[in-house]
Length: 194
Image 1 (cartoon, rainbow, N blue to C red):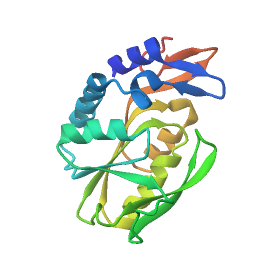
Image 2 (cartoon, helix red, strand yellow):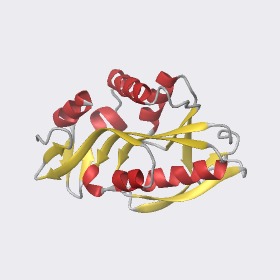
Image 3 (tube, rainbow, N blue to C red):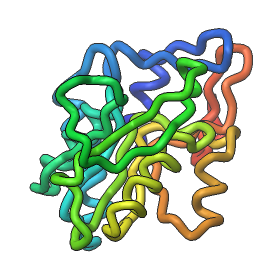
Image 4 (cartoon, rainbow, N blue to C red):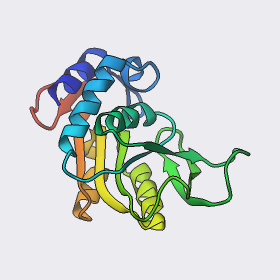
């Protein structure tokens, strides 16, 4: 999605530790008009997949997932990081290592919200090593629902999480794939320009 690549070039910041900061529009402050464009593109890509629910993980994936779900006109569900007192014991649960926080979290989704007859689209803001998506895939497997695929706003292609999932036969569609972030320069897969 050229508009997303342009937005990353204009507002993204490459930080030490292989971090791309896009907090000005994607995951701390949300540019709602731009997010709706992302939602429209995600819905266009998966319009014929029979999606009944969009699933993400808290917190930064929620805005992207909401935009996609809204444009697909289906509910959005998000996996909570376990530990709250308002979480039922009737949950699907798995562990996910967070690349950003360098910590493992247990995540849960209430069994009320995902049923075996659902067709699930996974949505997240970033894909690096694939840990979050693998955790969400495990939740879908526990539920018996069908997995349509995943929609990612920004994939760090050089970290290969997306490629590994694709090799497993999972449909992964990313709106912007970064091939490298060296010396503060971002190179996207589709155009090779920084």
